[in-house]
Length: 375
Image 1 (tube, helix red, strand yellow):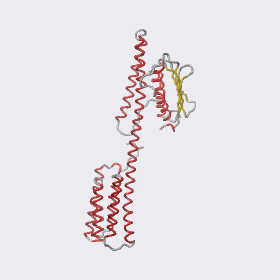
Image 2: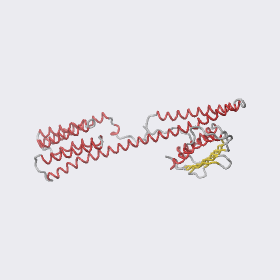
Image 3: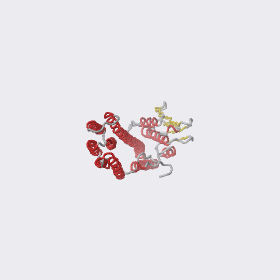
Image 4: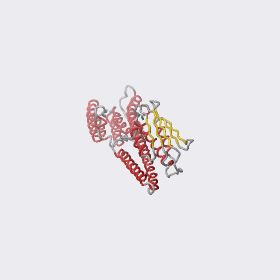
């Protein structure tokens, strides 16, 4: 662990067995302390009862409800036969554990039973009337038992919220990786399918063109396998919230343009570095736009321009010429523009797309490039 990382508290590093050891030591020490106190005030009988009532606390994490009712019965008997007025203290400790570990309804039932039993014992057992009166003594004991229950309840709710947030984060990460897999597979399989058809069509008339096209097919397949292995490696890696590592960015655009299939003219204006999330969005938008060119416009020439007229934003323009053949709809199409718009919206940007008067198609996106875009 590096010096810059925050180390967890000692309590956060204890295991279940170590916690049970802590509870055992604490129960023994409290039994000795309250036993000695009870002996001084009420004799050996009161001291023995006070000690016995504390001992079940040693296993409070393993059997919270059973420990509570055992301690409650012992506290009521101690109050009835020895007049031990602090009998509510171990009950409060057990109530805290029940509230922290058990469901809300069971926890509330345990609180009600505990308050009723201790209050009835205090009110009905003959003993000297305290200065605050019996009612005041009952109210004080009830408050002192309710407070630990409230603390335990708050701890349980906080833990439930943290677990829910962790599950939501895991779901979001899986959705993000699913989107990445979709983009990779859709782009490269489209390139492979279209270029394979072209290679078959020109194999007899132009063997060199067929050879070049098959080389593109091989490159697209190897690239797809590499990206899929990278993302699957993230899914197999331990730990939550793992990033996708070397996610593609602006530096990978030339390779994307070379392997796209159509002739791509790429222009990238230099500018300040973009946040990694924005670079990934730029790459995926260009990738999906080129996929649509391959799917719907065949081998039409295409121009990709990334401009930085505003230092705090990046503009993406992908324009293709008129189709070199009649466009054909392929299975699985129809979601490219939706995916690109979602990509842009995730970064706080906008995207517009539509046909040109000359018969081609234009995709234009504007993404914020400042630090606030890094999410």
